Image 1 (cartoon, rainbow, N blue to C red):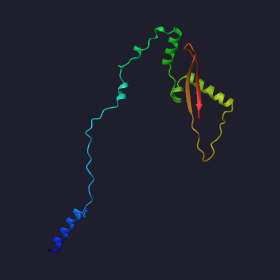
Image 2: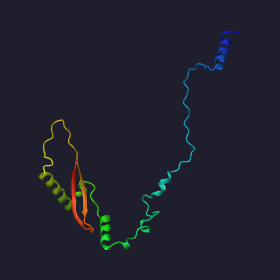
Image 3: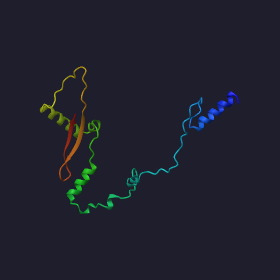
Image 4: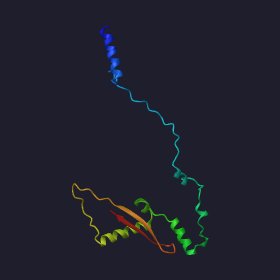
Length: 151
C-alpha cells in the first residue's frame, strides 16, 4: 500500500466518523423556490367595494328619509352638499373664506396671541396650518365660515 492509498483510507475513515473532507469551494446556497400555496385576499376585503357603482348594501335599503321632518331633510342635504376647502389655496378662491381668514387674523392680533418678529439667526420657524370649517344652524342653513390657524 502506497502513500496515496493510505490518504484515501484516512479520508474514508474521517467521513465515517462524521468528519468532512476539506474542499476548495464554498457550499452554494440552496436554490430559491416559489411557493405553490394559492394566495387569496383576506376575507374582510369582500366587505368593501371601491370604485363600483353597484354596492352590495345600498344605504337606500336601510334608510328612508320620508319619516324625517322637513327641517331635518334640509339639514341633512346641506351637510352632504357643502364642501370645506382642504387647503389654503382652495380657500382663497372664494370670498367667504378670505373674509374668515381676515377675521381670524384680526382676532389673533387683537388678543396678542403672537407678535410678528424677525426670525433669530440659527433658529427654525414653526410651521402652521389653516383649518376651514362651515358652521351650520339647526335648520341646515349656514351660520358662518370659520378659519383657524393651527401651529
